[in-house]
Length: 400
Image (tube, rainbow, N blue to C red):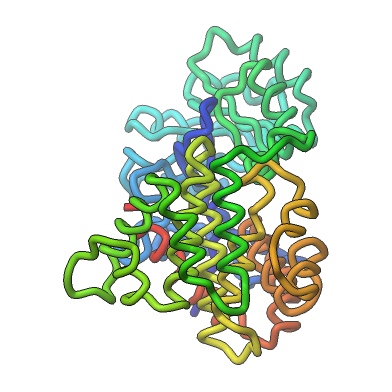
């Protein structure tokens, strides 16, 4: 029996990740896998929230959806209150039984959130016990939410904007009084106009160009790395943390000998991404290397006829645009990559494009699209999920 989960970062005003919503979806049109809501919550908690082998949230908060009956039965009290945010689903009925459960959970120290909230007088008795209210800004305009936020000033409630997709929406939500944010705004460039590439960004683009080539020019890579002390230092740290060495490496030339071409592509990618994201949300860096590793694992562990190192780079390049605040079409003109890779990145075409689409859909818990992509790629959903879990653990280790 398999369970499926995607985690979506929740950010604060400074774009720091404060937690993750653990997404577990199901229904007649979303059957990946087919289980009832109560069972889905139970399996998510047991398989992903409690498991010591697959800790989905590390030291962050875990936002978990609870259906009505599980709340009335006080199921959240089976779990530690210090890192769990209990989300009360939008289809819960605000009756006395639910209010009694909410009071009990609040008294026991649990953080409570109203999910996809729509203002309704029936929820007023609940407000003194609620810590977070989540507004879907696609269905509730920011201006309407702002009026409700002002109305709730007497309560100790924090407000979270869901489905924030652009930098402009992020700024508008901040101005309205939201302090937490969820969505894909961090996956888009904050500057819409094209701007000149700064020197450090130019070094990164040159590195990307070298590791994208069919044959890596080690001398060229070394040349660009030694021009930037920070880049070369970070690379040596990654190399010395690798299991492929038996003694510390003190120069980049040594690193080349130990790593070889495949490992070099990966380590240069990771270091360059880390350097590019030094003023970006940590979640963007994490998502970049997660996609890259997941692409590589899927190719290595299935029968997809693709080159693993190529898949790794495509996964990483899928977020080049927000990494460098440049339009993707402009960026890939600087890279010696094939038409196939360009179409995968810009149009999600071909096997590589399906691979990226599957990963993006998994991140959003769009299970129907994931299933369709798995069929097109001729891999099983179980294989995809196993690779997702393994890559998540790998990324968590890197982050530590």
